[in-house]
Amino acid sequence: MPSSFKSLDLFGSGPHRFALGRQGQALQSELFAVPPGPGTRYLGLVERQVIVTGRLVAASEGALWTLRDAIAAQLLDPPEPGTLIDLHGRTWTDMSFVGFATADRTDRGRVVSIAYEAKFLKFREYPQFEE
Image (cartoon, rainbow, N blue to C red; front, side, top):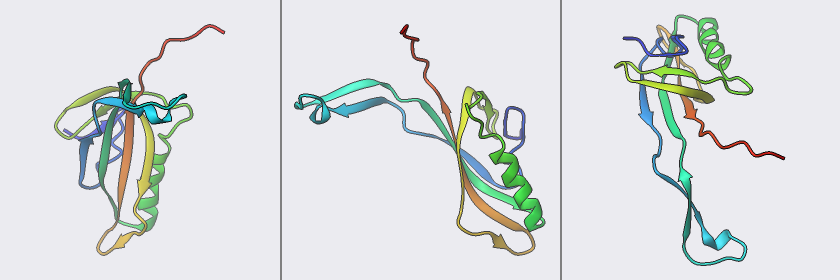
């Protein structure tokens, strides 16, 4: 099963893997509160984070830029959540694509390739306050 985001095969040109980001409570030291005090305050659960790392692979430099541009085109303002599916069929719903970074150099040989990291978050919903 190919991986996808919003049914788009963004990462399938080369090897890639999915990893979960840190899970647990968001914490804040009371040292930074007003007035400062000892201890730690919990702020709630951190947002679900999935990180995709891998390598984009193409036959030419131009084709590699096409792959990069296709991924970057999914970074929207504001983010539009979609379904993220890994190579094993694991599904995360309502994920927003929030970051994309490539390595500092392109590797060249029979093919051209570049390492990357893509970050997805499931934003927490907060109650709306009336003004």
